[in-house]
Image (cartoon, rainbow, N blue to C red):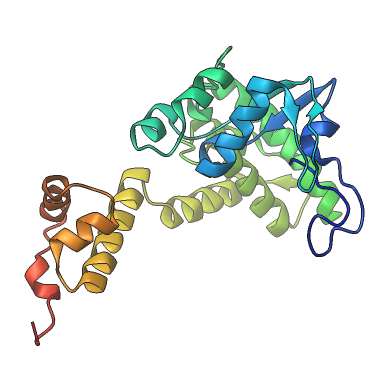
Amino acid sequence: MFGHKKGAFTGAIYDHRGLLQSADGGTLFLDEIGDMPLPLQAKLLRVLQERQVRPVGATQTVDVDMRVISATHRSLDERIADRQFREDLYYRLNVVALTIPALSQRPEDIVPLALHFLKQVSARYRKEVTSFAPEALEQLVAAPWPGNVRQLQNVVEQTVALATSGMIPASMVQSALNDRASALTSLDEAKRAFERDYLVRILKITQGNVAQAAKLAQRNRTEFYKLLERHSLEPALFKSEDT
């Protein structure tokens, strides 16, 4: 992203401008900004504030003038509360905010998107699949789409891969939707499972020592005890027999 000078590190055999310099005079798109590591957030904030970038190994900064567009599927307010996203960077980026509704909230987009993906995937698979049966389109519009546009794309790709004629029938769409529904759990269920597995691992590491476990988890003891209670975990069960 920041570029480097020749010889700045092993393998740096030429000067590299980096994305920030390449975007000078244009637009830089940063996808999934909510997953950006904190150290990189600090560096990006400095670039946005000073309008300058210093490549790795360079001794001088370079002026950059660019428009920045960022996107995320996460709640940045929650990331800020969890201290995983810098509040100052949030306000620097959040000049104009656009919220894209979930696919289930804009059913009028489902058919055009499905036909677009159908054309793309058919060309990639080199198959003459050109349409959906009317009943298949009805099923696509009526589906809940918890996985949003990417789920729709996946369903279309699965039906094209298995298609034996130029028209995708409703039964094939229904089968793809059922496969996706059975493979996915809700986001709340996934978060809960991850949280419990994390607590179990950290209790094993600390052999049930709540003070050490809370410190590793970067939570105070009161909050950590509430997490244990939520998942019905007893610290004593993780103590070694020698203690």
